[in-house]
Amino acid sequence: MVDSPRAVGTQTLARGLRALELVAAAHDGLAVQEVAEQLDVHRSIASRLLATLGDFHLVVRGGDGRYRAGGGLAALAGGITATLRAAAEPIMRELASELGATISLLVVDGSDAVALLVVEPPAATYVLSFRTGSRHPLGTGSAGVALLAAGPAVPGEAANVAQARAQGYASTYGEVEPGAHGVAVPISLPGLPAACLNVITYRPEIAARAPKPLIAAAERVHEHLS
Image (cartoon, rainbow, N blue to C red; front, side):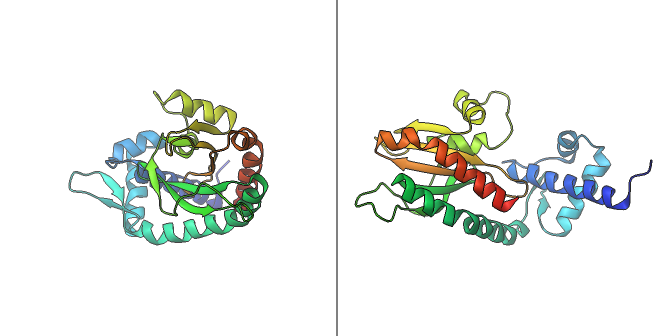
């Protein structure tokens, strides 16, 4: 049976998006052969995919022959993050009110977790909060762990990342803010940066009951964007 043109086109699009994702995530870029191996395709197919992405300035080929993220991603990123923020904000406001704690939406930016949106509970007289744009290293704090858990398992990854992926949330204490509890749930969708919803609080009882409503909120964001 011969595949239909639509099926072939869909497969090519999926491979191209995956190639873009791989290149964008590689700190030192990727060679054609490395992309081919990760996509499990012939080198010539990987080369054509990268050339097409290059035509749209989504990747660039350096003097060392390695492909890296191109300037065209900046325009896409602005639209993508706006979509993510719009979907998450009303859900985060409900959750902040329910838990009486600050809720943040963080995304991966290189090797950091960056706060894309921060929502404080409306009725609380005292809350722990931080600014939009604040960042800390991936792997640190509940959000840094959850963002790593949003991706596939990798050899040698930290035990707390594997645990967060298995149980659906990450929980830490005092890693970013001394004395503060953090609980975060990963959100992973094709075409969107790895993201997470995070609760930060000094109150252990809030942190203890946060996982279930956080997971439910993350599922709502996922459904809205699916």
